[in-house]
Image 1 (spheres, helix red, strand yellow):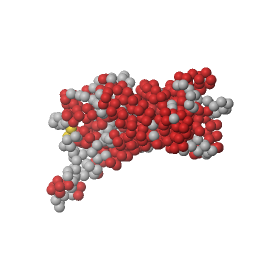
Image 2 (cartoon, rainbow, N blue to C red):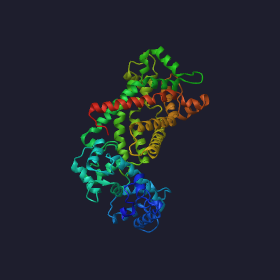
Image 3 (cartoon, one colour):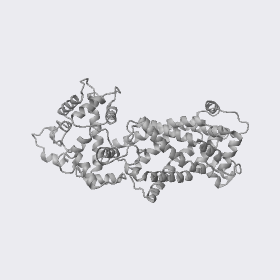
Image 4 (cartoon, rainbow, N blue to C red):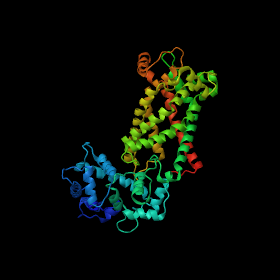
Length: 502
């Protein structure tokens, strides 16, 4: 039923072939279109889609809800989980009424087919219009999953209708069209669930890691490589980070600190070595923060996601924000220590432990949580805007420039990540500045107790809106070098640790 609705053309023939088959008697629709336009967008195509729509519309109310799709597809011999069907409805439901009317159904199929065609072209490495077992093995290998030829053939058999042991575009589309997967990792994940892999549903590892990486323990090598890259990146950009903290705390209308002046002041006060004050604790907190966020993200995914493996954007936002909040809460005293160490004068503390001991003795445990509220509030706009901008930029690039591949490539993703992270920082920066000032002001002798709201009002009254963005320049100056250094070190550490590129 599904395959009869769709055009059986593999693709429009090349111009020379079309010219050779056309004649004066040919209709315009048949030129370059083997189906004559009757299925590829012609009126007959809508009739066939209407027939499928009516078949799936079990209760005859003119809309397809999750239950309609479940019953209708089961009658057609297609079995989908409730989570998968909910994704189909959510992807096509433009008016948010919980079901798909006919126009939404047609639009969803057309949009989904475009995405499937990009994935098909990515897998079709020989560019012969067919996918064979070797191409499936290579695609899985690129994602860090090794399978045997027999396993690849088993995947093929699940889609191969004519017994050729290859998959053409029609077989590929018919198999995946009414399944909500739309990119290579999701397609492969679906293969794992539906054919050969025992994925171990209780393994709590983020969806960035493949099943093979989970089962072999390769995931921890990715985390170690990421942690090492973060340590090198933070160390290389530490002078800019310390300058940002100094400008956030000390710069004002009466004390207009510029970048060159700030560096000169730091070197004059403590020498070149002072440019790295606070970097030690900043590097040390990578390990506990990454580990806690990693574990918390897993638990949050279970709570907010209908499908633990493939979260929708808003589910990723909620899970990521909550995991970030838990991780930040756990290591927040280290954040306070980092700020105090960055602001310290020469000889004020002998080290991190001495700093922590003095804060505890003089100010009590509460001092380690100064600025906690603005820090937590800043996570939400940062995570939300970062994720939304990243997904928007990536999808825009795919729609405009992706011709033969559904994979944007690492440099496009790095660019999208850099821009989205910058936008997220820009939105949450005032909260970060208030947090830093609250952490710093507690150390000043005789300083009055300040709250987040009173500090906001004071800054706006004395410095204006610009005062909320003190230190923004060095903060943005470190983004591109930090991303570049992280990427280079991460790739080299992966090679050292024996991690295959995904």
